[in-house]
Length: 333
Image 1 (cartoon, rainbow, N blue to C red):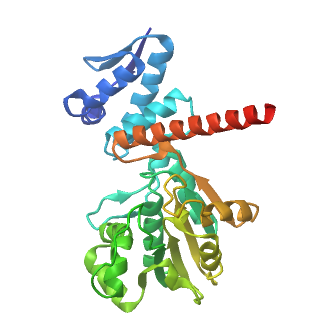
Image 2 (cartoon, rainbow, N blue to C red; image 1 turned 90 degrees about the vertical axis):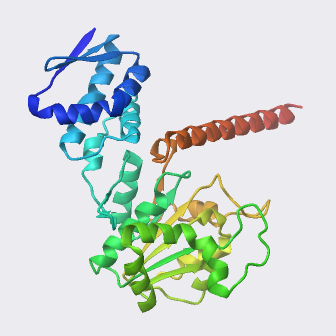
């Protein structure tokens, strides 16, 4: 079965973009679907089994449309478009790519890159409190930060407050040198990195000095009422139930809250309950609180990260299945 795509002369730049450097992108498509892709004059031919050629055609059509829309065709976009084709999903990367949240200080657009990320940014727009739950690399913190900075620049809020629990990631660091700010800065570094990239170091420093941007450990939130603020709680899986309740009851009028967490990367003491898990159970029925679950499909880092996340997901499922079977056997005995 051969599928064809007619290429206008004006589209040569876009077809080069879709094929990628040294035909890297089209080789990925050929390998994934088991097809051959080649050009003859102004026609692109896709040769293979009927179902595979149809999927490959959908991917190339979508990537061409993305390129014409001004998007750079990166490996992540190619892989994600292939996943959508495999699942026969109605989601379109072209539609997802249209939303631009803001631009970094270098002028690069910040936008959702997957259907899960689009659902996440939409929920942030619609709900007062949003929980973004998912593995590393899914853009939970970065997209929330972009939304916060956009709201701040548009004067929808008067300040941005970024917080996370100051807890060591599985190792004891001992006493850190310097004053209190110096001691907590290493725990908050990922938040600073995102701020610098989107806002720029100079603008960030000015707003921080004015008190318009605050980056602080979660313990600093006790006793405060946070009105007219955009508040992001990062690494929420490392909160205790008491800390999560304390944080949620700080929220005042005119505020927007995003809480991010990865339930597979808890650094709490063994046997300790996570505030994120308890909040998920307690708050799920409140209409103005949204829960968005991102998966390995939404990972936008190096493709290897996606494979690592998938491998751990499968390992955890297998472990849970074995544990259930073990409990059943013990009951039968």
